[in-house]
Length: 303
Image (cartoon, rainbow, N blue to C red):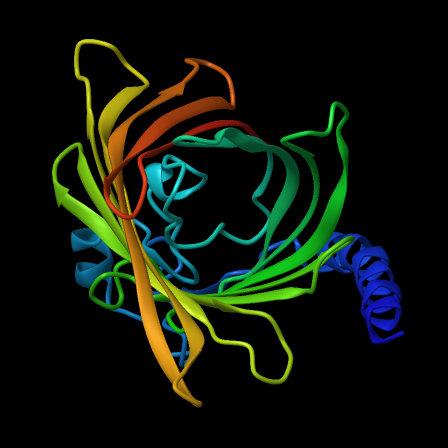
């Protein structure tokens, strides 16, 4: 019963996000503060300048106070397993994700498709909505998996105002055949050197409910632009994830921690003179109970 309430509430919120996003998408007007106009000689306080001073001042200057545009590389997804910063107000991005998991000796466990719409609402807030479908091992057809709402909250107005540009990422996913999931992630990152970028995420995921234990971990990614091929960048991505389990032994409870480290190469290509971007990454298990492979493909369009 509670799950139906969550799903109904999510549908209402999704229906409201689109008109609200359109309403708030336009960035606030920038405040202009006029300074001396050499042709008129007027100051903001109403006083005038002398003729000699007007002779010296040949350029009219206006100071514009407002939000600075974020660097182009920070707008959109350039990594498959790590996120960074937020979209500027009015910027939008639609993404199509594909990922799969292969574990030995079971083989391919599942495949997943996800469609996501992201929009920068204000300088402090980005909102996303997503729907997903899955194809599990043993089932021949794709089925609806669930839907979700995401928010990115930036404590600073402009990129670069704080070291590592911290952003709080919140996600609530309602699954059709499984309990809902909540995720909290801290996004960090920035430019290391010219054309070289790095991103770090610390996350915790849990199922709301009594007795559920969280999953937590870290992900990191770095990429370097290929100067000879405009729009192409290559790098490395990683994810370290821990899961806590409770086992009953000798009449008592004992907690065990299981971990897995995934590591692999990634490529990102922004098609010149378009707003299309394609990202691919393949993670291999470097540490864990069994060998696994996770390919991820992402196609995105900025508008």
